[in-house]
Length: 262
Image (cartoon, rainbow, N blue to C red; front, top):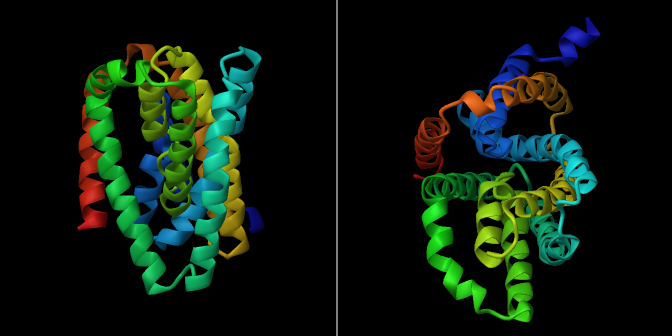
């Protein structure tokens, strides 16, 4: 009875669906899970974000370990990002705690940031290649010191964005790094982004836990579904029509983002 009460199977089914899409498209789970929890299940925005942050941190640990073993993490980039994101996440958490995480002001702010971040993610999914190609000549001429400073600023933006919406450390972070570091391989970019996302999501998630916006039953239920969903779908990713899936996914994010932001 206790296990049946603790495990909420509708969240497990949602976890399977989101995990499968992550495995097929490589898009971060936060872009899918958080709006699903808010719009479909009516979860309070702060609880959806806080729970999804810990969910993301736990699921990204294994990915980070694999990239580290393969030598596909640039730790200098990770340190630069963390120098901006960790303080920004802590300040954002302090602001949420001050205003009250379940207050109408916090709820509205989270919903708006979540909505606009989803819209930005959708644009990036559709136009990433064009954005990177257009900015490559500009960033290739920039000094390493200036690139380093811009990476810290990117970390600040991601710290606020991820803490408030649980979204940004995936599609947005990778695209920004591809623009800033055009000479770095895509594998290293992805590995560095995942390595940075682990401490960021865990810090932000732990902060949400401390201010009372994490649902542990929901978290366990989501993990029970999403982990096998990711593993199974990853085996079929090479056969999936990537462009069609990403276009449909982007349109879904536009719809969800508009619902939340407008």
